[in-house]
Image (tube, rainbow, N blue to C red; front, side):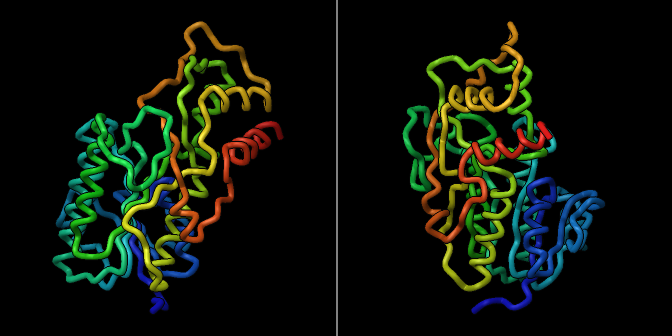
Length: 288
């Protein structure tokens, strides 16, 4: 049975969380939780609290929630920053809601394909082994397990590299000659920020309508591409500086192709099905 007037909490309203909250606010009562909620989208109700402060959470988390989206960005990109954001913060929120007697329809945990360490160019799906070597992947996996152990139905959505108008570092590095990929080129997987937010909204709305959800979805566009190919394509679309003497190779751990088949089978459709649509729009915006 569909929930007619859902009450939804988005914990962590950074760039992505705010877009998710905005997308849900058209049909639901949406609360945005962050330490300083002064720049939330119109229609999102602000809640000021630190996820590391259980006393604050107990004072502000609304009763009778139907869904929670946990979408954090670490304050520091080290092991402690990831543990705080994805493990202890989530534990505090879950404990607060358990003490309140909440009966959620769905807890959605926002994770990353960084939980996959594979480096053989093969396809990865939701059943592939997760054996991360880096602390970021390990802490995300701990957060996923924490969400799975919560007393409500939960789903994890793992995003590949998110890009978009507010995330231009890669595009700028190619244009400015700061990137010179070295063969053999690794595969890279990306998802436009608008599609990432829309995918989370899509899954929550499915759940609120009483439609079944899997416990995990991979959210990446439909065309994995090698680093060399995407750099060459950008260079063909806009004037770029030649690579500098100290240009980075861009090689990072892993080379894999992310399958979005399960997400597509759920009925989701990408606005930017490949890097060409997404980066093409960003390039046209620069040129105009």
